[in-house]
Length: 96
Image (tube, rainbow, N blue to C red; front, side, top):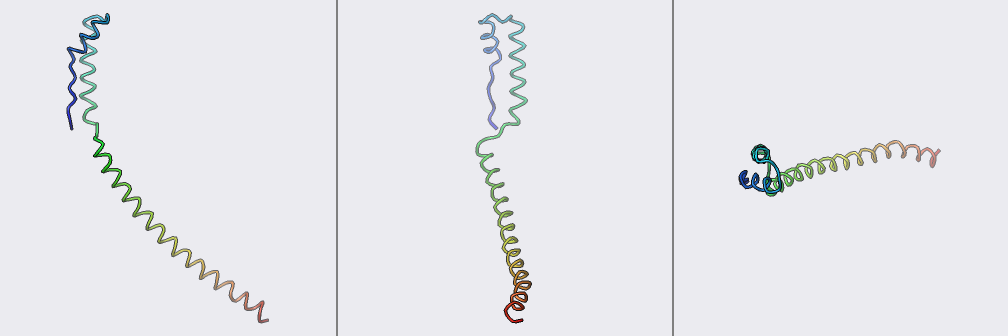
C-alpha cells in the first residue's frame, strides 16, 4: 500500500493562520495524522477491487450456469410428467 504523507506542522500552521489557537491546531494536526494512519491500512486499490469483482463475477456465473442446467432438467421432467398424465387422458377421449 502507498503511504499518504500528511504534514502535521503545515496543517497546524494553516489552522493558526485562520485564527485557531496554536495548541488546538497542533492537537488537530496530530489527530488527523493518527486518523490517516489508522485508516490507510484499510484502503484498497482500484486494481484490487477489479480483481475481487472479477472473482465474484466468475463465481456468480458458475452458480447461474448450474441453476440454468437444473432448470432445463426440471423442464424436461415436467414435460415427461405432463405427457404421462395427459396422453392417457387424451387417448380415453379419442378412443372410448
